[in-house]
Length: 596
Image (cartoon, rainbow, N blue to C red; front, side, top):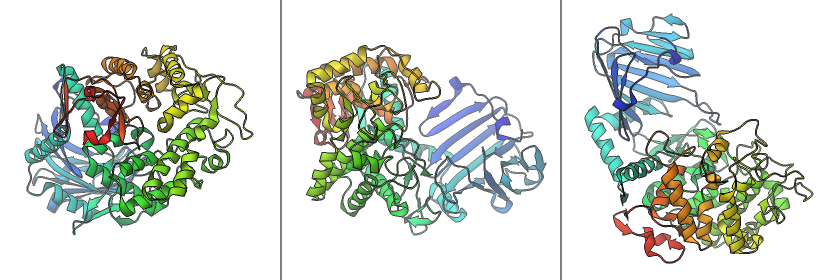
């Protein structure tokens, strides 16, 4: 009863209500109904027990140092937790305040615990501690707010989110907010399953990144700075892996959430100003758990579409140039292998694992830098980075038709198996990772001997057996299993490196082949049910692959003011209230300006 792992309870999923703005479940062991509706920086909770005896509201952190204090005059639980993911977060604390309705807590019968020992007190701190608040009856009504700044700020957040509002009014506000977001694209589906799948995916599109700033007493944004633990002015965003999300999420925001996108970019640039490096995978602090600096594409796409401008764009450009040329002391920051890439035109085997992906991503990042340099009138820099963006060619092996890792001396790694995962590649093999040249697909086609030859290579990819070798991994990872579980050859649509592969046909002028594969994948692998994704959904990236594929467009190269075309899979589409029909276009691309 005292440990977090001992407090779980089952519920009947078919009886649960799960909506973007509201959750209700019936816990079987505790015989209680639990309802939650979120606010901007917290939530409102309503608990109803079947019986009036021996009921508790427990707050039990999963790990790390915690602190709990119940203030009886205000019926408020004050809590601090410090556990966060493996990130660079100096002196991180999450402050929480939980205000109960008057008379609902019997503090004399409440207790705190640390593991197996129970201490009758209303205040405790230490490792793995929790608190159990005894209810006076069958009900608990709790308003919750959190802060990364202080208890005082948490109390201010509580006032901002909850003052004068009931549980039901907060729920209604949440419903209106979600309805507005989900209505930014309206479809006429062919059936109810398609409708539910499409808007389930739309919902996931707006979950990340998280706001990580708060409004102070003067209504100005402030935030916790993970690089030094200070409190800074301005906005900040967290919980996003750009290696995943640059491909679909931010191009989607560029269409339907431009103001939010602009503020996100400002937050990402604030990270650079505060710690000296643009973020790679912020999760409170920097995690650096995926390779390279694909924020380049996020910032570039915003810049060419007029969303990122002025001094913020100049600061972003400064940060991009830094990580394109300088190795960080800590490998969680910046481009891995940046200096060897600059020296050799590729990342060698000796410098870093996954060197093929690092090289191709760096070449694309250089192309993104060139686009921003052009916008800023830096023609010499634009020319230099356009030249560097062709570095992907340095790893192409004409004999096998794949991108392969090279040694410092320029020779390819001796052993090579295109079905072997990892080592030189990220979450895939040569099959999934050799075509990551979205910025220069015509140049890639030339390496194969022309567009028809590249299309033949993609034909071979789809026709290949979905087999794999563990290779550089110590065991079978789930991405391998997911690829082999479906009949799409070596197109591992279950993971981000394969997202653009069906669209290579369209980028080369053949929209019919793209349409064949995207329709087949959407019909076979996506649904609104529990098993509705072919792999990791990853911060909205996979959900938006489905959304784009259904409305008939795809952001093949973020940073270009165009989308490649495929056949739409719904009856009709409205984007921000304006009718849009991808099937009306004859060419293989659609201008960005036609969508806004």
